[in-house]
Amino acid sequence: MKALKFFILTICFSGLLNAQSIREQLEEIAVIDQKVMMPMRDGIRLATDIYRPKTDQKVPIIFSRTPYNFNSWGDGEERTRTYERAFEAVKRGYAYVVQNERGRYFSEGEWDILGVPLTDGYDAFSWMKDQAWSNGKIGTLGCSSTAEWQMAVAALDHPSHAAMVPQGFGAGIGTVGDYYEQGNWYRGGAFQMLFASWLYGVEHDKFKPRIPQGATQEDLIRISRFYDLAPENPEVDDMLAAMSHLPVQDMLVNMGGQTRDF
Image (cartoon, rainbow, N blue to C red; front, side, top):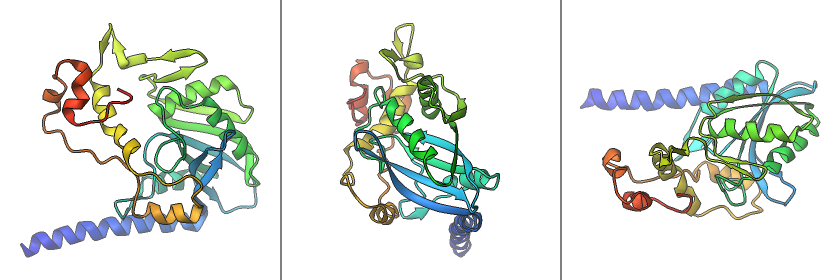
């Protein structure tokens, strides 16, 4: 038992040191500005973390816009993924900017997987190019939902959108103009079960208490250390059995999930 306790303490302490280590390395080379609330044309503000080189030179930007959780804290523990990505970008001379779509986590507004305004992307480009530290060149990066958004916003042809790396954009959810792209949600008229489990995992944050609009950057940074708005759903013991439920339209109800987007 003593050996087990020592092992658990060692693992926990090691994780703490790793998080502290990468943050300290990043702090040596980067200006860190978290929970910047970037304004959109309709007044909605999107939560944005900015990591940029400590230099007087204007720098290009790597921009990742996502519906997923990039916050540096989760359940009171410091997370390293965003720090690691930022460190890799900053040490190469780029600013790294990551932002949540409207209605996700600390971003204001309502989230709609088929209707997030493309103007949010255009407005974000315009805001970033006008910053004193920016050279006006923005490259977008990301996979899945983050890639599908890139494909759509590229059609707006913002002059600062200089490059993009859209990885794995096969799901194809979203709109371009009046065209609603369903992509792999349906094949041959049959709903693909993968997306039922995905919706089960992402819907819950809509129904958690949200931070009031207009909160200050300082308040959001402090709150994020203890309340990250991440969905916390009951585990499904047998997902295969759960997805075998008929009728399909009641599948998420049977799993105890939310059904609005479904």
